[in-house]
Length: 112
Length: 116
Image (tube, rainbow over all chains, first blue to last red; front, side):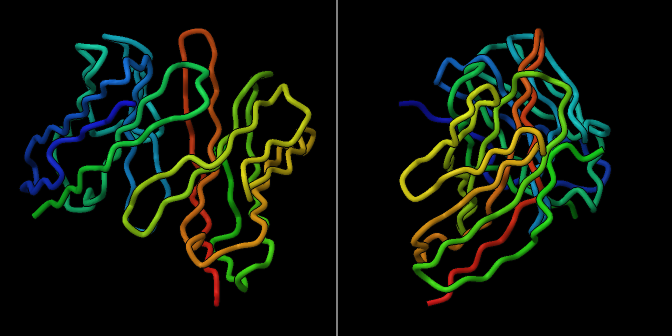
């Protein structure tokens, strides 16, 4: 078995601030994803990566940067936090073509 | 353009009945994977079932089964003998794996309420 660890669990930032969210997985998975989930809404893909140093934009990449320096970790940066950005950010990972995609427990972002 | 569409925002059924949730998708790939996940009240996202596009047989897992209609780009989730604990938000997702890409796109979700 393995686990996906997202840090921090809660993040409070100020408007305009640059904020970084981290995700680690010990499954040895190739692909990692970042999603944003607004309250009561679906998951929107921000960035994903199929291997170390690979980055691919999702539907919601504007205003975000991502980094995959190691296979086991994938970080997401909010380049300038906005008040309408308050949401839960979910990290996920999988081996390509695998049966299942595994999710972390999320980072809840609040912008004040 | 939205690639995975769930038109039902909320469904309410009585316990022990059967419920179907709809999902349609768009893709240009000849091979893709379709998933259903549920999100519990705690926020946890749980894998339920998967359908590979090249398989004609509908997938089944316990009291979950799929109605895969490839010509209609449709993948419905059927839950039989529903229980109170099936109350959750259900997401349909499509995974497109091509050379150099592995994109997983979700629908907006359907809230399922099981009434006692």
